[in-house]
Amino acid sequence: MQGHKQFVDKVVLRFRLSERVPRHNLYRRLADLLDWDFLYAQTQALYSHTGQPSLDPVVFFKLLLVSRLENLVSDRRLIEHCSLRLDILYFLGYEVDEDLPWHSTISRTRQLYPTAIFEHLFDHVFAQCVAAGLVTGHTQAVDSAFVKANASLESLIDKQSADESPPVLHVADKPVQEAPAAAPEALLTSPAHHLRRVASAHARYLRNDSGPLGRSRPQARLLSNKTHYSPADPDARISVKPGKARALNYLCSMAVDEAHGVISHVQADFADRRDCTLLPSLVEPLQQRLLAQDLPLVDLVADTNYSNGVNYALLEARGITPWIPVFGKYKPEIDSFRYEAETDCFTCSAGKTLSFKSFYKNQDGGLAKVYRAASRDCRLCPLKPSCAPNVKKRQLIRTAYDAQYRRALARQQSRPGRHMRGLRQRTVEPVFGSLLQHYGLRRVNTKGRSSAHKMMLLTALAFNLKKLLKHQPKQTPRSAIALPVPRLQGQFLACWRQRHSRSQLLGNRR
Image 1 (cartoon, helix red, strand yellow):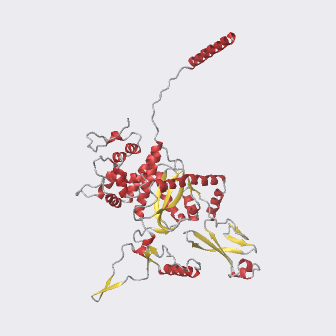
Image 2: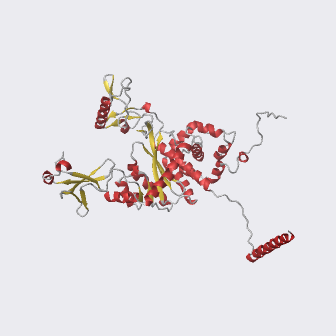
Image 3: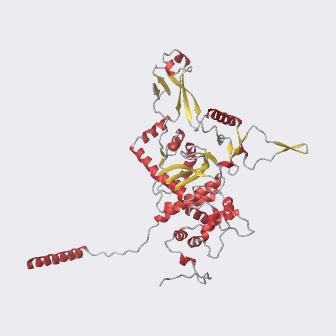
């Protein structure tokens, strides 16, 4: 007979949430693993001794952890999702008939808590991974990726020149200074010479635009971080990835341990910064975190974007071997010039000396050395038309970290260097793909660099907790009986004789 289920919406008289959540459930295992009661002492000073009770700090951080594990970006969707899941309610400590916090309470509490609490929580989970044997600290892979900011390019407005004074209003024939904008002044203004340089470049681009399709349509809006900013999120920066359109982004810099892929450090940076300039700010807290767990940092692996003489010298001074490929423009030798290390000078093919003259800093902050020949030597040299045709004397600019570059190039061309390049590709790049696609890091739902740093810490924390849960050994009872060796041999011989005699008997009958 065909069954027909009838639904009656009645009040359940007996219901225990713990009986409905199985033991192997992810959030039940997380509830048994996590002990975050230390958060009460760390957040006590942020609240008054009077007033209404606030959102539980442990519940707040568990809600943020659920948003990362469930790949949710919106706080409003997070509350709706948690109210429909029994296992998440059990993890949060809420009953079925108990109302969850309002979504705006989560955003206000996130702004209330300082970044130090999020970093301490990340260190706490990282220490658990170290205790479980998931981290060796020996080799760390470093990389960065863009994360979309909570702002649009349509909201960009022009910056003012730093030399311009704010407009003056006249009320009742008396001048009144206009109130400054809400955003910080440093982000609203730019040096006048920067703006003039960008304006001339834009004008030159518009004059040279001779495309047949562009004349019938209005010109594209030319945007730059020097001329525009977003009032919705002033910390967001215009950046572009190869093959993708421009967007307002943050830069997520991360270090991953090579043993089991545990994230050892993560930070939020401005998207218009170069990777090579951010490595010093990343290495120092990374090494301190590892040393706090008695783990020495020996090797650091990164791509060519981190290639810089300053970085090579910094890592070697800290006792770290930099496995960073040398940038393609570096050449260990200069054609027709021979370097003399004893006198620190170059000798050209005509036998003339180019002596060291001065230092200067390049755009990456690295030191460069200037070598220059004497005017008389170049003026009387027959090779001047081909060597220095448009200048009075020949000049060479060489990096001051030439020895570090040579050692890095030798490591790059060695067999361990090729191994390290493959190690970086299979260590940090899959982790970035997982965070961007499955842990809610595709977009930052907060505003400001500090808030973006908090969300990146929570995302890395959720990833490490998932690694820690997968590593938990399954405790299954096992029993074994040990028999004496002579007894085993006797049983084997008796069994073999019985089978042998039976086979002989069957053969005789045939």
